[in-house]
Amino acid sequence: MSRVPASQKMAKDDLGNMETYKTIIENVAKRHDVDPALIAGIISRESEAGHSIKNTDPPGWGDNYNAFGLMQVDKRWHKPRGAWDSETHLDQGTGILVDLIKHVQKERPNWSTNWQLKGAIAAYNKGYKVLDHPVHNMDQITTGGDYSSDVVARAQWYKENLFKAGILENIVSFFWP
Image (cartoon, rainbow, N blue to C red):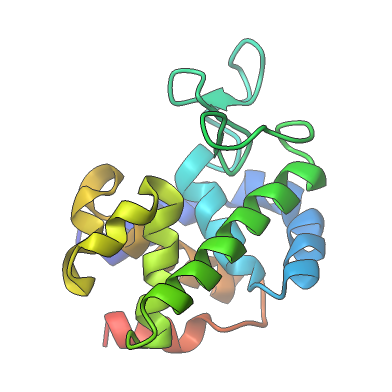
């Protein structure tokens, strides 16, 4: 199975859990002016929509107890807020993503909007150091070597199957014609 279908299958596998969070994802997305499908794509990649972290002790922790919640906010860089599956947590994680988007837009103004978004998604996983890599290779240092591409593919699946409005249509056609 190629990468995009594999990513979209994982998104589909997480749908049952993701539906639980649909309303709070939409609330947070509206507040931050972000496509809810993008938030769902990150949640799916980071925590399998909560499946991989709900039974930790205490619940919500991953990455050797360094990352918290559905969006796996890294405690080494940010003080986690809210319960692991709360709107407060999603607001924090989405705020971090929005800050990264703004940073990438400022630091890489010559990149297309699509590449800026992928750069911000990759930076959500590995920090600003991804910007030191050529635009086509920034995923190489991310978890699995495919973080931003995987998140975008999952987000596209959620766009088509759970949410109906946003910016992802052009991104997927740009990266996967």
